Length: 329
Image 1 (spheres, rainbow, N blue to C red):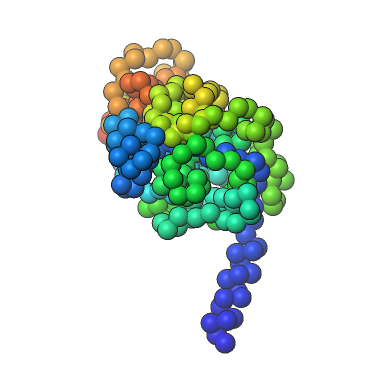
Image 2: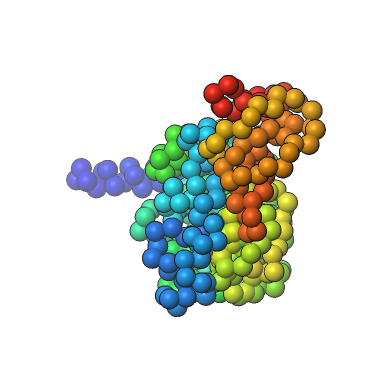
């Protein structure tokens, strides 16, 4: 009797959770893969080269939602979780505190929820390609679940929901708590926010799954280099390289591109207190921080080499303390 009562309470709680965002007709792409026995690698019948996620550098990319405290920032490899997903980079960047760490639910065309043994999916990254098409970027392990057990073409027809349930602690991050206020993508602050104004992925040609590089290198069906943080929809899966969260959407060779947004990185940068937008020396070394005017940036991996990614736009000051801590206010 007690067990039944507890079950009823939990069921009521689950059904009462606020839906911050809901969109339909989504396509899945792949951009990273950790601790998954190289499930999308050629030796396992996948479309990508062996150890594509490691060799491409995508796994060493910093997700948009990682901590901006250098000592606490983590790469996809350090999170060591296949539950992290990336969505519309504009949506995530618009209000990091509102969206980061929230539970993501994915439902197949048959209406059944799709999960992986590790637990619920967590929104932790921004995807550039997702700004112009209904795309959700996931891990290789999650991709195989969405593709019916194999790493093949990019599947579509999914319904995606972002739930107001903070799962940050389950990834080892500090709790962020429930969403407060409103967001451009949920102006009323209530349930089931309408999908952002963007063309449905079905409107564009659906190539075979092949991830394109973004904030991180990850293929959908095959690794394919892409431009900075831009996941693109493509036929065959290809790995995408690490990139940071860039609001502008880009498609890379019709491949699935990962659009990793940078959150924070180790390695302190020399203070650059000047608030003026004067150019800064382009001495980009992976993991290094700098201030470019009022933009706090980190040197992150991309499909080809490295590039500076803006992780925060400071209001009045961007500098570094004598101990190397970033000051952005």
